[in-house]
Length: 310
Image (cartoon, helix red, strand yellow):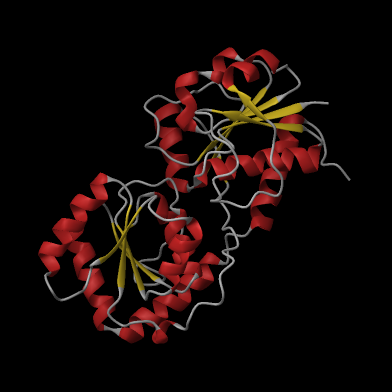
């Protein structure tokens, strides 16, 4: 039986969770035997994501000794320093879910797929790669239906600060806005379990997201799915789905003055903000697992030259 090896499949973040699902598709739709390749001795017991099944864990060294020409390797661009594409046999798939997690791309894979139009254009302009765009999907959040937007606290802005750059811009935003908006409710990028973070988002009218560089930006879309109005930077990758002042209130990095203007505008105009909430919720519905699986099944079948299992 052919095998699929997913590098970092058990690492608890959104990018590796999507890579895990590519391995799951190869397992369930094409009959591959799956393995999760450990990067730093990670295991499945972190509790951040729900996995349909768990794969046997192997080290990078074990994978390199086991992999054959009939096998498939899946690795995100952040693992480019290993140069798997140049060194290892088999078909190799790279789901490019970002552009800031690597310095030099492992550019010898058999298939590259981009998470957004921005990442597609970056790979084309920098490496000459022509890639299809397949957005990620939103996990079912497992929460009770959130309160209607108008029943949430009117002055509540939840600030989601992912990384040190976001915190610097947050402090500058506080200086600009002063006491006009309460920005005291803050969560860090990895400070809460996923369910608790989503519960906090679902209880807020507004989510301030100041991450400057995202390949896509799952947390803003999760917030939109919960009816929360997203304000902040578009993260570049967010241009895939944001329509400014239509389904979000976003500015391009580093325009923190624009973020301040947008935030004040939506807090002061409840009708506008509620309309953005409704539109954002509709936008989030587009990112379903069914679409993700269908698109990936097609490109994998083409790569392997074989049909999906009946």
